[in-house]
Image 1 (tube, rainbow, N blue to C red):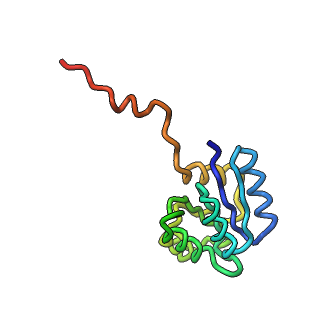
Image 2: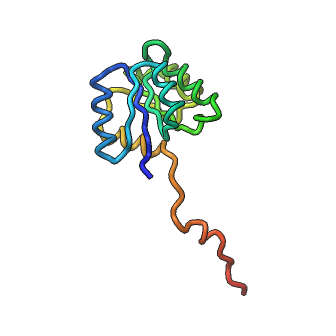
Image 3: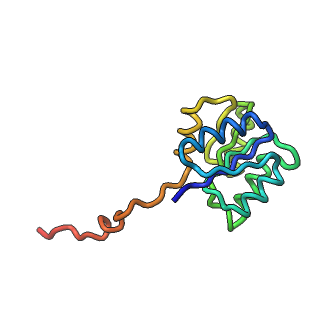
Length: 139
């Protein structure tokens, strides 16, 4: 099953770059350019992951993150915060609001994909339940 990623950033160039990288890797990508739109799309799409810029119009990424994590229907979405600032205060605020990771912009393709893969929930392997149900041989 194809995993869905919502990119929420008001910078069109960043959105285009992230979209291209993620689509090339086979992810389904949706885009929002402000905090209100990001929250609306998250509630409609139930994404697996949200790449969320901290500084956005209408509602900050921190506010959106808190609202996603406070909504039982979408709280399972992993959130990776994006920002052009790498200050410790901002990183702490992002993590305390429910983000699982933080990427400082600009970032390279490898770092972006590494953060996305680490944050995404892994689907269970087929047959994995079989190995846990097997009984160990008696001695």
